[in-house]
Amino acid sequence: MQTYCTIINKSYLAFAYVLYQSLINHEPESHLQVLLIDDTMTIIPEEFAHGPEYHNINSLMQEPMTGKIKDKYAATNQNVFRWALKPVFMCYLLKKGFQKVIFTDPDMFFTGKHCFLFEELNEHAIMLSPHWGNVNPLRDEDGLFSVLRNGLYSAGFIAANQKGISTLEWWAEVCHFKMEKRQDLGLYDDQKYLNIVPLLEPTTVILRHPGCNLASINIETFKREIVETRLRINGKYEPVFIHFTRDTITNILNRNDTLLKPFLEEYASSLAKFGIELYKISGNSDFLKYDKILYKFKHRLLLRTRMKRFLYFLAEKL
Image 1 (cartoon, rainbow, N blue to C red):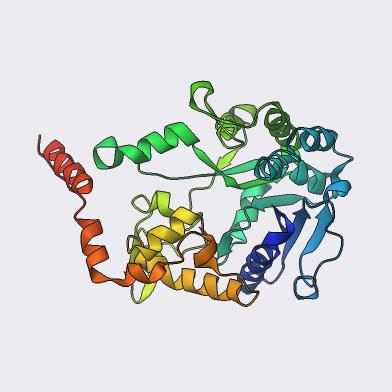
Image 2: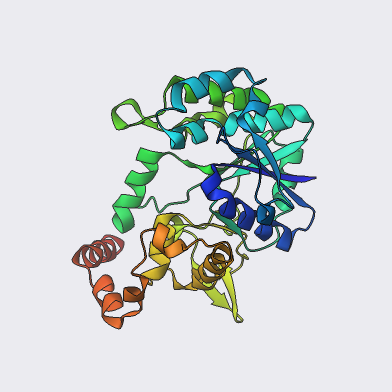
């Protein structure tokens, strides 16, 4: 069984359902387990009821960290509460009998075959997905600083089999301990802790498929190209899933990442069927401005970008 899971509040039901649809469109045997963190959410609207399996926070109370995390975060920060529950929900599902579980954020969108992700879990207890930002400071110093500041791996995707339960329990404990963005302490919410996971679990595998977890941060590392009329990543790989964060959406609309635009339009159209205006909620409600040719011209002539390219050219010649 190909079991995915995600965590939402009731306002994100449409996102979870579109995620589910994208999964089964390419792998019909996929299943999606959804944790709703709203205490009052007991009835799932009919339009979302068929397909995903839903759980509420009370279902997880048998997990030792659930009550502690709820007491610490639920009343003060719903985002932190949701993030801290990722390892708890994964442990819960694995202990219920699911052999392998993949967590994805609800704003992921699958665009190709993905069964190979579960094959990686035959021999590996944990699978992590790097951001794959450009770490060459001569090309993109911000990319290097982002990796150092925010962590090597994306907390929007993590996979585990039953042998990874102890590592997930550790992750839940440190998330309960502290969830902050504190550069002085080396913290970035739940994400920076993932740097330690390969040290705790020696069978951890790094997801290296360039078609996975496409986002604004890896536009240079995972080059988008048209090969024989089809989109390929680094000239060879099919896109598998895209993380439609606010930055990813903006990057596509401002013509930095135009080859992903058909997928964004499909994603936005899928959400619109449930009354979700993606561009509005992502802060891109004035998206028509991105179609202006002067916007593209202005963006490409930014002085900072030109200086970086010039310095990189000089460095190569020295």
